[in-house]
Every structure is written in structure tokens, then in C-alpha cells.
Length: 99
Image (cartoon, rainbow, N blue to C red; front, side, top):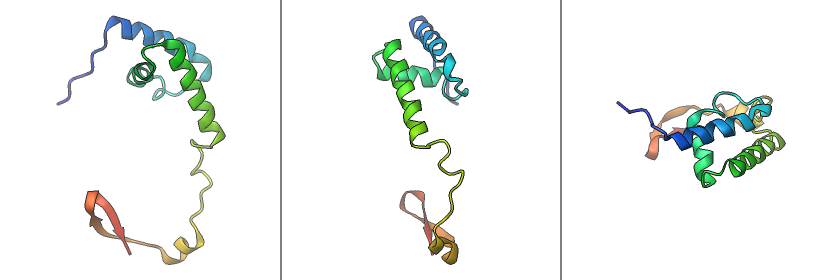
């Protein structure tokens, strides 16, 4: 059984400060979870301002590139529709093998 990750007082204060700065983005719980915000802070040497800037840049990039909606209107290629490949087993690294 995994033990919960413990954060120090400084980390918790920085997470709360970062969470407050991001409130205007109306992000879902996955984005503002303590674990996720700690990752952003650690990647930016625990600097709240830098982490906030990178998160905002990431959100803009995701919107420009339709990352969150890319599959909403996806249609399989005509060849895939005709062939209808089926998984017949698995090969190395649990990758599906299809026909």
C-alpha cells in the first residue's frame, strides 16, 4: 500500500499561493491538485511566479492546439473504416497486435 506524500510547510504555503494566482483560469481539480502544483513548482525551482507563468503558457498552448477537444470531431480514415482492424493479441511491452 502506498503511503500518502507529505509536503513541508513551505511547499504547502507556495502551493496555496500558486492556487490563488490561478483562480481566474477556472481550472478543474486535476490542474490545481496539490500534487500537480508541487510538480510545477519543483520544475521551476519552487518559484511561484515562474510556475504560474509556465502554467498559463501551457494552458494557452493547449487551447491553440485544441489538445482538450482534439478527439471531439475525430473521424477515422476511410481505410480504417473499411478494414476495421481487430486486436488479435499482444506483443512486446503489452502493445496490441492487430490484423
